Length: 131
Image 1 (cartoon, rainbow, N blue to C red):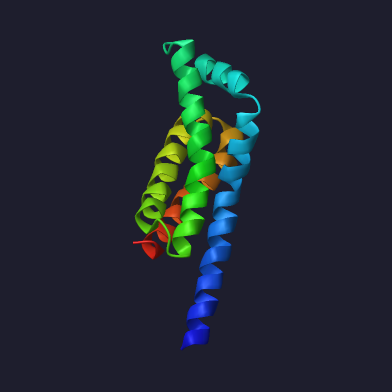
Image 2 (image 1 turned 90 degrees about the vertical axis):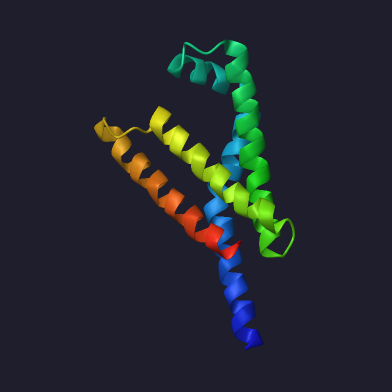
């Protein structure tokens, strides 16, 4: 029925907002300190030139801010294919960030690692609603 479809869309919208919020907020916070975040990346990957780290972080900020907006828009029927691909872009980013910053070889990384695995699962499920 129509009521069931409306409730289903509300549930999908709420879950998408909750799942994307961590990335959107992180992107806004990184945008306030791009140089500092780039220096942190350069410490993790010293073989990369500082300017490449800076460009990478600018790309991450754009991804973390724009992808959630595209995903939410796609639930309303706009940019549906971009919402779908944004889910996979965030999945790829989360895998890379997990390998760089939350690799589970240290005890203190266990919970952040598991959180990121759950986030990846959430985006895989969400992407199926945006196909």
